[in-house]
Length: 261
Image (cartoon, rainbow, N blue to C red; front, side):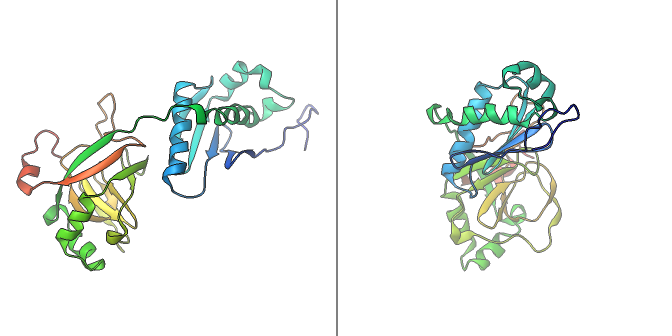
């Protein structure tokens, strides 16, 4: 333990533990709550429960939450925290605010088991599989010793959990892909992938909301827009949603209407 410039005791760099959870600093204005080390529905449930609690009971100074597969980054305004929680301030804390935020988060962690879990939504997404919309469908089928129609049947008969959004605005990372159609990424990523493309990478599936580069195996495309920046809720999906895909024809895709990418 060291000292501050005025000689007062400096609070050490802490790592707070609450059960299996850990809270660690992320720079000088954020903390990361780590709730597990593996991707699983149980850990995801705790990530969502803590996010829900913080959204309904934010501490003064909290700025933003960024959930991931197993953790949540909590960003805060240090000056607002310093003014709002003087009772938490210990000697030297004015030079290092993380212990204040960590203590607040640790108390919240002890309450999330009593928090009603957020109600999941089920979102159905139409997909035109194969053809020009899914140039890698045959590769995915061949890689797994299946026919293209069998890949479509397996992909569209499963239920997927939205673990997180990332990479691009509204891009959902979906867990629950059957191992029978798991396929590695392309060796050479594409420079531009059309918006709405549905892809597979390893044991995950996802949808490209915008035209971006990417290396996932493309098996189809949806006419739905997953990201509308002008909308009150700009992303179609949220972490915790359940997704089901269903096949549509090329004609249905072309006639879909204003949501056609």
